[in-house]
Image (cartoon, rainbow, N blue to C red):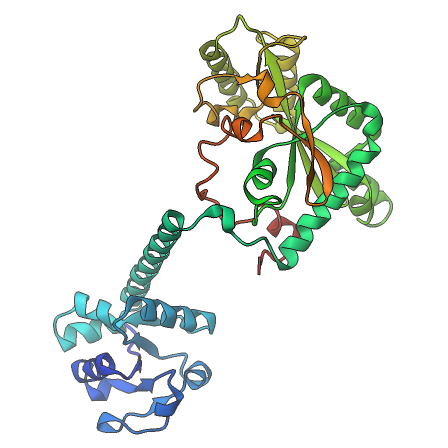
Length: 397
């Protein structure tokens, strides 16, 4: 049990109560953010020090936060942590844990107890944030969120420019990638990027998907091969300027000027195969996939599944759905039916973030097959998915 002196952070009524309860002899001084009170000797001659002095000279003391309001309490805790003051706890917690001065001091002097008290406060802070997020989800209109700013916005525009540039380079393939996922939501809901989005995804009908995949095989390095090339060349610059690609279970990705362009496959399904039968077969595929160890072997297995073509038709049909080799499709059954062909085709060419791209014929209906409700705030609201791995500041402001 390590005996440490106490500093009371907050010299209002609750601070004075804490002083009386803990005993003047056990309290070193007060700390307060109100500069007008600093230097005044309060009850029993206890000094009031400014916070910067606490940080500089008193980090080895136990700081007891003496405020009643939950928001103020969380603000003080955050202020302490941001400045390297980690040995703190709330006076309100002390009163809950101990009835007498002796019990209270014993609680303070136990490092384990102090840790548990901080954990309780952290949980309370998380709960408050969850309540705030829930409030905004219920009262704010997602359509009117401000666009991204700063580095995130610059990254979004870099993505658009790089993708448009790369797409123009493969125009001779005669394929028609169309915006899907978050980018299509951005078009429908925000007239541009979703404010926190940081990549670009495309859908391709199977024939176009295989054509592009074969092009990548014949003309691009894999990511691993490009890294090896860069090593031989004596540096990693080649991995930034060159274009490469990588195949994953369910999709493949082209990397161009550090931008990742994701491509996902859609199939025409036989009109003789019910949606429920397709789901059963897809479940079999995913079950088999879980037993396969490496990504390379998973990809090889899924290539075999798509080549076997048990459910799909080479020609067109009335029904389109996510490719059977798209492992994400299990999360998209809420509609309980295939996507009608006329929801996707004919594709429309539109202006999105200053460049032309294809989108499905009926974008909002199409999104209904992937997302249950695009007008609600999602769980990942405000969280870019890729910037951190690239070492880019995720700050949206």
